Image (tube, rainbow, N blue to C red; front, side):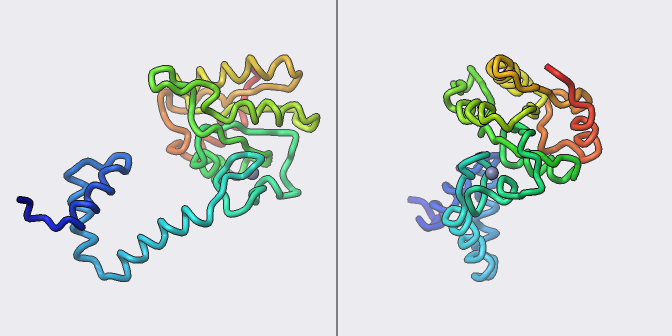
Length: 199
Ligand SMILES: [Zn+2]
């Protein structure tokens, strides 16, 4: 018979479902929360509830937002002729931090990965192609991660876009190969945006 109360085991199990959390870290976090003041634990629970209740995917760019269209898509100072394609919402934040980009975004929610069984249909690629046909878009900047999946995804999308007559560009090299856009430093990322090249 286990000496651990069922509610504690449940919390550990839930924490272990988070990325990067193994049984050891899960237990540590659970016992941290057990010992923490009740307000702190409830505040975490409430933050999780709110993020699920209050956020939506923007119907245009598929970024996570509290309204649809999102603040970026509805900003009149943004250039609607330029779309930057990224894998994840966190990549939008990374590019926004550079303050060098003034176009719109399109979040794919992943990258093509045959190993993980993720094909183009699982991503927001069809929606991107529809946007690229709207007559306003002149350039699509492919800012997928500089790793195998990101490159494959960029190449796949480029092949679909080129017949539409829009300019297709890719971030300049210089980003750490195999790395994640969200971890790139602002200066490197700003340079990669600046030096983007035609595909
Ligand atoms: Zn949007």
